[in-house]
Image: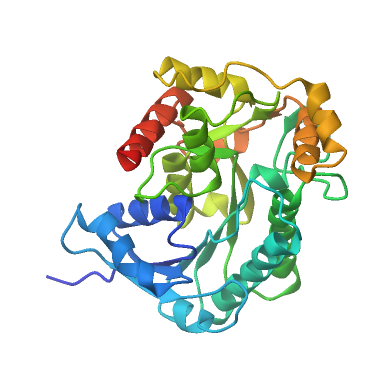
Length: 338
């Protein structure tokens, strides 16, 4: 019987929330996976997350740093595809926005340059609705919208916007051997693969169900299940209709923060907040608090919808309902806490 060579995918930031789900989906679909880590001491722990499903898994690891050239060519050399997920994400505003922008921007360019030097067939880049929906007042966002980073949008939003723009400019200005797809999730929720409460959205929900927030600001999120995002990344690898496209991957409608909390209370988490922080309180605090300034700008941004017509036309896109997403997420958080 002829041995069919499995294709291999390099996944950057392999210890992260979205990346772990991408690895899971790749393994399910029969790919070999090479995951990049900053700390190779994590490798055995991550492997153990997947070994439960199968004694033999095609999963290996390599050491990469978004701020260092070392190892990128070696990592990409024997791979067919690249999924670039690695990018810093924190809820609090950093003292210096370079802490977020520099690794996001430089890491993206290192990934693309390595892909181009090593005959990668396609790159799928994890972007965000952060690069689409802020700094302007579009009531319906589509994949032609770009965030205006001259406005007070915060370091994370700037980092995702700058990194994605740099990626498209690199493709435009260089003779590249591959197409690229960018995936734009909203706020990502859903079950954890890891056994740690880490990552911005995971920490957010964990704090909400444990009563750490007495009240919430009047802001809206578009939301998506991490499993749906992982499938879009993997299904984009060979979907030529997604080549060189920005794929918006989130809920059509913005969901009020308080509505998310209401769903959590309906699931039995009575400590989840019931009340709003008055806008005038946030506006007053914004005068001397950087985090409150960003919150105030999100309040001002208000409700928006997302045009998902192209996503539906390219993929079989039937996202998991938010109620199911939060139920599965809180179940996995509780298992870790216990």
